[in-house]
Image (cartoon, rainbow, N blue to C red; front, side, top):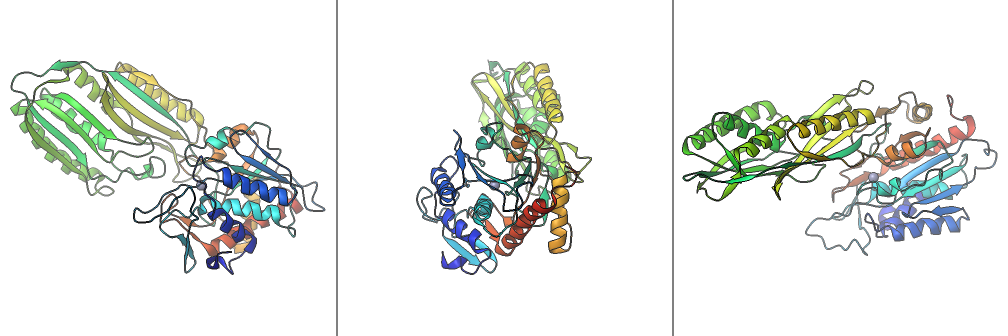
Length: 492
Ligand SMILES: [Zn+2]
């Protein structure tokens, strides 16, 4: 074992983590990690199955005397996000992750560590290997390609899991139990636009909104940060109310799961309108800062004159419809949960806008932990788009996981945590996707919780795990298995 990990407890868990960190396993390239898990199953003479997607399921019979206990599913994902600092030489397709233990915090040297979800996987492997634990039958499920769209979980075969109690080992805070996540679905809107030649003497301007923080459209949406597209449209709208304004180009936002940080419009207008636009831009920047500056102190609204404009722009009707559509579409939190204080239940992100091929394209990304609420908001988006004369495409949504504060498994997890650490864990839900959402739909009646050690900055080279919490997490997990083996799960 790497000298860095010597002396860390539990030793078996760290030995498996040490092996995993040497195995290339970026999302969609998990072959070697899969082979490692199968190797462990073979050496322990445990039955395993592999599906077409590459997910591996290993079954471990109950420890002696606990054959009648309910089956528990342990689940983690094999893939990691492969990110490195630009000044680091590292080939994720073959180089092992180099470790750097600073006090109790285990980092990698300039790359992602892969503790997400390497610790979860190593925990399940250590439980498969353990000879001295009390536990009922175990199904250890190792999924692939979690990080780029949960595609491994999506391809799980209905019926493959017999157990109806599941510990997902992919959470990031020791002492917190996650009991819910959001589902999500996108909407692509195409508003047909027509162009017309610009009048003689038209002037051009580039209008920019930038300096916003943006962030993740799930986990940061509760902060009510500004959306650059929305701010830009507000400015164009108030200008267009009193003046003719032709949109030559309009763009903003990028990834569906990122709040737009920047948006730009190229417009054509006459001299009086340009003066009005410049004045309004100053007023809007001030108003935007007074509304959003607490979270977005860097908002900058600018108008750059580009001289005389010629050629084509969206015609007056198309420009107006584009602004009406973008002003009408929702962005942000729709509703907070009644059950879990502070949890965003439903939200939508106006993620990006572009003009191309005779259409104004708008991409919307909607999330909710309640499927009908998700569909209701998507229906509203569709209705607004249709009223504006646009076509709408909505891919099938991925399912969320509705928090169940009365979950019997949660009850056991709380009790075991209290016995071990003197207090009950915090109970939370997140407004982003987890594999549990899909598992819950594929395996009806599955009682699930998600736990893990304290892990910070996942998906970035700053990722680290607190090694003390790994041992705490281990004791909590095996304590749970033991309690379930000996006393079952009251209420089920
Ligand atoms: Zn993960």
